[in-house]
Image 1 (spheres, helix red, strand yellow):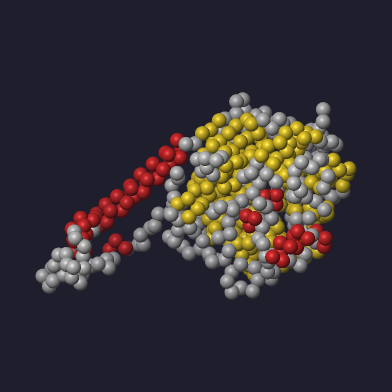
Image 2: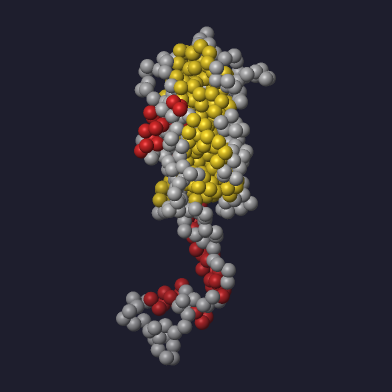
Length: 489
């Protein structure tokens, strides 16, 4: 078990200690000379209980109120500690012995063969392919599963051999798995009187399997993790959080899970259809009641106070049913249902449009026509040298990181792809993009294709393919299975 979510403690408004209580003054059942004692409207002993637990207003002192508050706080803290100790006693960690060696780089492969396979049912929830690929960090590939007893297990695989190197287990099922700050990040599902949350957040060193910082969160199931280098965003339709590398929250935005908050959240009634992160900012596309189009809001990811969002701008986008694609220093891009990419400047003013043409294929159009929001409220871009890789659902587009305009488009792809690591300073970036029957080898700057590397995926169901490159291993996410591919010996 774990402590219920909704960790904020209600605060007493200023001056409330001195304000008259609504029970002050003569009771309706009191006689002219004072309390009349219990009558037929009061249960046996009610007056005695009131005398013990809540002193009459005329004898109530500040110290009484303080004592009551302290008793309540002590009870809550004690309960939380008991629940937390129970969770920790059921948590197990098997570190890597010895730690995994750093991944070594090599030349761009010309041939690949499968060398290992592993199940990853939690690491690939519906739509996870849009986020890029498998959860690979450092020399490890992290996979997640829920065991029959309800516990959630994260296993770190050696990217070279696929052998399990470390394992982390908690008594709760997993919500989602991701990476950021050079670590694996796991969110675990908890249930409380307030509902179901992804409350328990743990970080794991990918080389050793040792635990890093942890925190409690208030995000809901369905959340996804977006990493922009300095921060990680836990997405949500009604509420999101932003964390820095020690998992301290720098921004909480949206409808809070508890009704107590110091300042009303702006646009709390506006559900978010998509989220993007980058350039120390979080962009959200919101559907606010009574507004004629989707609202585009861009906020700093580290405001002066974490629970008081600071807008860079918030404007009506002029688009209904759009999807955020990316955010840069002074640019934000969203995909419109008419097959165009709309660009906005740092003040939210539309400054450009790019026709995507066949890049928005049948899959993307069908999703737009049915009004289906992207899983986890984001479509996902990833940096690959000189471009941002964006998958539309049928094509991979290389976006300029500054202008967010397309540099090149590769049609008929199965996912965004990934850059091949190189230890040669100044070497051009090569991108491997999944296509039917193999991996397209593409120049990252120009999109110029080279000969495709054949890959046999006949043993797996058709569908999107996520790709990560870990040293000289290419890892593909094919539904609920990850496959390690390496050059033949």
